[in-house]
Image (cartoon, rainbow, N blue to C red; front, top):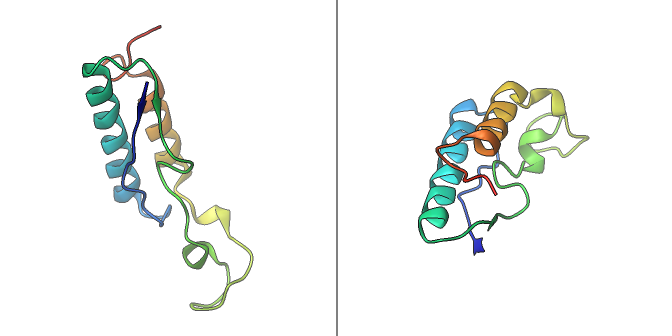
Length: 93
């Protein structure tokens, strides 16, 4: 087992940061696998941990309800799927 800490961007509306986060997670998974780990634990929100300020639906500087429609869900789903199902990353157990 391995425990990994990735860089966690706070802006889920930034597609490039989401892709970079996914790339880093897969790199950490490969490193852990090379060291013999069969399981890697990442922190909650490893791909992104949204800032309340970024997600706020109100004017800048005012915290209001989160607007989850702003998230780039297509990129988020692609990064999760790529990390889950890539043979280059995961060994089947």
